[in-house]
Image (cartoon, rainbow, N blue to C red):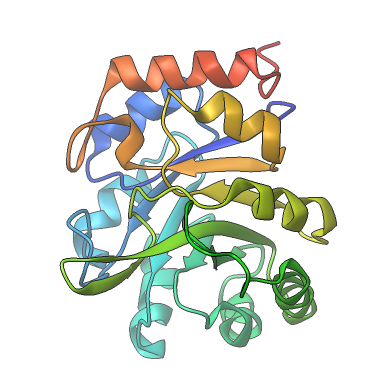
Length: 235
């Protein structure tokens, strides 16, 4: 594992992009599994080749998946981690770790979007949520931004930037490794890393050529900018 800021490239839909992300220096890939509102969503069955041949640790993203199907996902895909976009990671952590000892549980938490009135947001409330996650066996949190797109609330994969000043306060006090997600791209990743100092960054659309297909040029630019921010030790 590289020192500094980790990089997770999410929304992987094919093996070619998984290898591309790894070759450019990603620490993790993420695959969206049976999330109805995501255009990048895969089934457990269609994702199996990606997880079986993953060049770096692969994370399965789920949203309100039924427990039986979740058990099937874990046993068939054997992911490095399951990331919960819905807030049931804490309640499922113990059960899933009995099925797959050593597998990590990641929980997404959602910040206000940049430009929104943040007066109703209290970082201390989110930090208490992180503490509860830790007590339940969650291994990491992902600070993302929910957004309403075409009348549907989407949790993750929105391309919407969150309020990084609030994210920095949560990261600074978090008892768990905290990733930053939401609207990150090569043009702003250096600012994100320098201002928030997260454990890692998590992005999808910011390095796409088109929906579901990654761009070599954007991946390369992203990693160069993270390195400039002091977020990657290439040695």
